[in-house]
Length: 247
Image 1 (cartoon, rainbow, N blue to C red):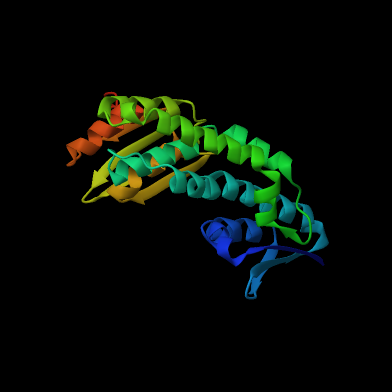
Image 2 (cartoon, rainbow, N blue to C red):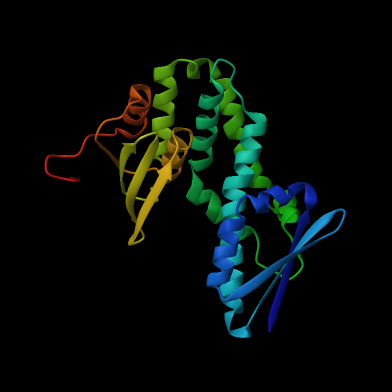
């Protein structure tokens, strides 16, 4: 039996909880089990599997921690330091999501090279002591955005910047189709040879699309919110399907 333990301060437990469903799925797929114990200061996460599965467990755990740093921690860092006056709350959130997605692959490579999975490792220690270069990058992003805040309050310039940032993101799914059913939005596509289908609210939709960064977004049918449709066209060059396709 192979056993592995990691920990983090309770004040940072939200990092892991935000990605807990992904972690639990990957751990099960690796043939392992997990459990939590906590005291007044720290939470420990315990993993166990057969010796034959220890490499799968370590790989699954590392992938999840890399995702956590590059998404959850980056969002926390940027959203706590960057708020453009003159932009609505929703536009600020859209800006944060786009900046989190930007340069995703190179940042994940940097994080991956910064640590190895070890028994007893402290996740918050890795963040504070081994990812200083990464946090400096995030600070530069925030500072540069603040310096150019004047241009962002103009809607056309704002969406032009977001479109540029999204175009530099490696797409998770090349083509997505989108249609509205009542007050929900149905997103479909193919991800790693598997079918993808999401049912999203209006509030969730654009954030998810930014994360997927599709090369092509195809709009099916009518959309009741013309402002939303206009945003999709500005951000993703969304188009109606070619004749005879996606019927």
